[in-house]
Image 1 (tube, rainbow, N blue to C red):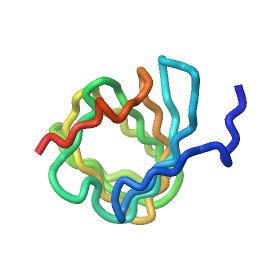
Image 2 (image 1 turned 30 degrees about the horizontal axis):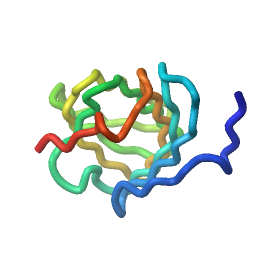
Image 3 (image 1 turned 180 degrees about the horizontal axis):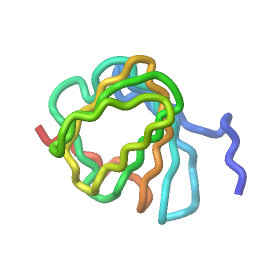
Image 4 (image 1 turned 60 degrees about the vertical axis):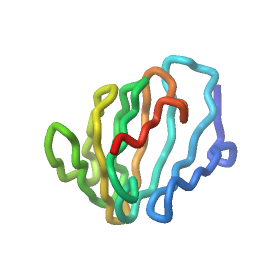
Length: 113
């Protein structure tokens, strides 16, 4: 199945974070790209309560502030979030690939504090 970049749906999560979701018929995984330039979320922490997630850094730099520690990330790095892991992230022109398993849905994405 081919999904063209022009078919990706842009979602603006905040002034600092935009995501382009690629529609897939798979229930096992989902794919998106993201751009973060600042803090996400604006305050507090978030968690994916129904899936694991991978951040793969295409360019830029940033940090993940997780319940498991603080991690600096840069081009070529990969961070694997556990299901339910509480975190917030920050980026400096950070471009990411996002992979989720099983498929991500807005219902499972929670602001936890």
